[in-house]
Length: 383
Image (tube, rainbow, N blue to C red; front, side, top):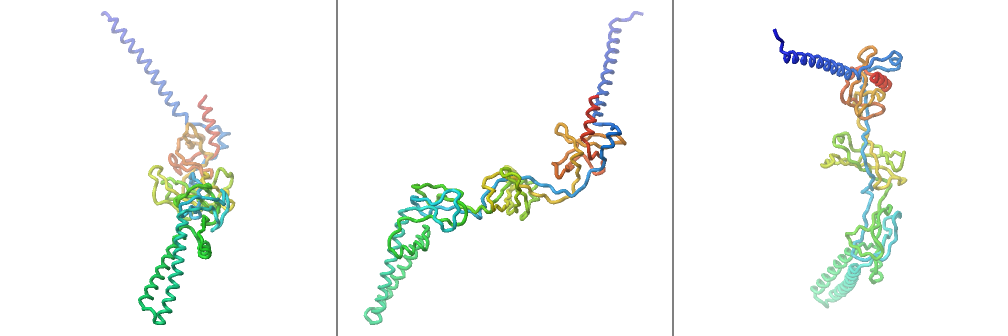
């Protein structure tokens, strides 16, 4: 019987490929087993004595929410001051940083409108004098039966109209910023005052001055800003998912990097009822005492809001090892065997890491010296 050489060659090739494939499968299986074992370690007795084994802890944890913030002036203690009339500034009495009191002159202004209003006031005042004397003479003549009653009534009507015109002219001058002192002087002298002082309306420091001598200003122009800086606002945007833990009258800790290691105590006075659509945050305002004026408007600050206490499963910071942006802990699987497992943890609070996923309170883990155990595991992996 003859053997076909082609068939024999094919059989030999198939046997060789099968043998090679078996070796490759065995090698892949062995490599996979080694990959699975890189997270497992058998600990030497001398290292085992240095490890602390126990369960994750369930404790009352109080977290601090860090909110980037900024210092602002207290709008309740701030005043924008301008001119009540269109005119030209002829003199300035304050500079930035000056401390002023209510009624103190800040600038001096001249205005044609002011002059016309004073003339209207003087005309009304003169008419009041004339009509009042005319009414007095009419009353005397009526008593002597020299004029009819209708004439007295007409003169009384003229006197009342004159009084109303004087009151309207006085109100106009008050709207232009003229006070009782200037009105009394105008009555006494009967001469138009050539200028008017723009005065402070509250006590505080001049933190803005937007005017120079010779500038023409209008009532809509903010010329000065005066603020009481003994209290300031610290305003921050709290993420919406933690805004539920923020409440009015809650004390918060304020830290300003520009000042250094000084912490300020503040009280939450406002929590917005709406959420910013773009940033998904809730605006929160804190009132902070600032007697030494160390906190300055527009400074950057950090707002630390203390969260309410709640039961939280945690592990000590010393139980955590980190590799490639992943947190791990070691679970005890036997007398001296440990398994490194990935876990999801929150940020550190008082040397503890809240457990988000990967552990339960029933697991036995390495609580201390996990770093040394991980170093031992890496050495074993190299071997």
